[in-house]
Length: 214
Image (cartoon, rainbow, N blue to C red):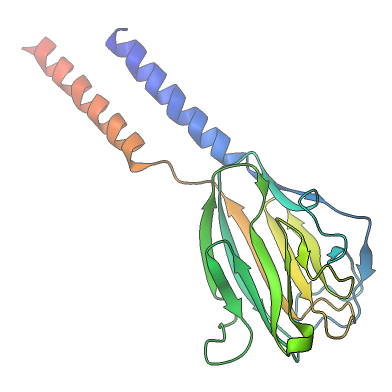
């Protein structure tokens, strides 16, 4: 392979990588459960709108919010809460946001993780207190307990942004403001090695030009 072919091939590979990363979007599979929101107090402008939800007794690995066309950088942003219970939202790395106590999260706090493969986004909502309301529901799995009294609400903002909203096990009021997050996805940046490779090839090109000039 000559130098020009090497340059062209390298550029094509990197361009394909950028295109693949940029193609990531959300896909939602529901359970035909919907709710017209009436008393959501998170200030999202959702009152009067219909959202999809999946209750704990219906949640499984075959439904929920997924990424297609990954990899993707996922950013979780805490939107706040209106609840008597102590609730949390978490991802595979552990608790992200909690609504009460000494470690309570600040509104609009955010955490980013990378998801390299297509599939369900790894997050959950749950309650730690009171004891009678304890439980957790997973976007990427089921719920424990598998109760119809709590649920995750899903509202699309765009192809790459979603509101995900928890309705805890305490009241069953279906206002989906017991804790909430916004999830955004973006392309995963190319590894630095890719740019280093381009820089190295650029250096070889410069050397080749100098050699010809001499």
